[in-house]
Length: 301
Image (cartoon, rainbow, N blue to C red; front, side, top):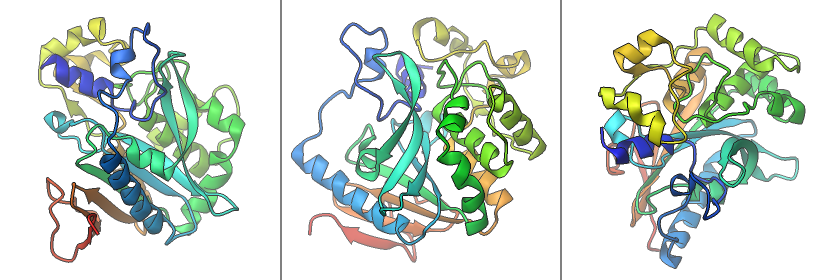
């Protein structure tokens, strides 16, 4: 496995993170390589407008995920998940975990949709998935999601991009989201042990992330030179098999779909010329290629 691939996985939840200071040991994992051009900013803002229109078709909460670095080496399209909600004033925000590079710690952050859409490594090609929760699921989740104390008690002190799904030692952005779903749907009261209780609820609810096949024992050395990767929370049998159980957007979507079959999924993508809107639980073809029934919007109008 190349160092580039390891660095990519380390950046699973870092898109949109605070800029690192020049002296930070993790700065190369946090800084955008190049600033966006005016044309790229315009394209992403127009893409964010389509995202906003799709979200505005509902009143509840949606699970939203975006692509970041190219993780196709691991069979991964989406790296970062958040929970989108609309305020009483009608403004949409994405509540999420991000890694504050200067502080070297995870934080909870409410981000506008434009910022969420711009948190991609490749401004020429990007994907966003929306899973619209049915009303009962949204109503059960909203009190927990907007409860500041519960949101913070679900936040781990240490970040790891490859955090084991059933350990409280570390956490990645997607793990925070799935534990928030547990807190809401399990009606779990606040407390210092909220993460432990959320994970117990997830086990009882049969949450079982599909393992990521890392493919090489070189992975075992990764945590020595990639500061945001750790292995000491994973079971020995998983490390021996080179298959790590990590919460990713696809595992969250599968869990939501199984628990609430009435959930609806919309996938959006853009290249440098168009936006494709695809409805349903099958993925858009690679390269943002529209299929039968997909809606296509030109970006050069």
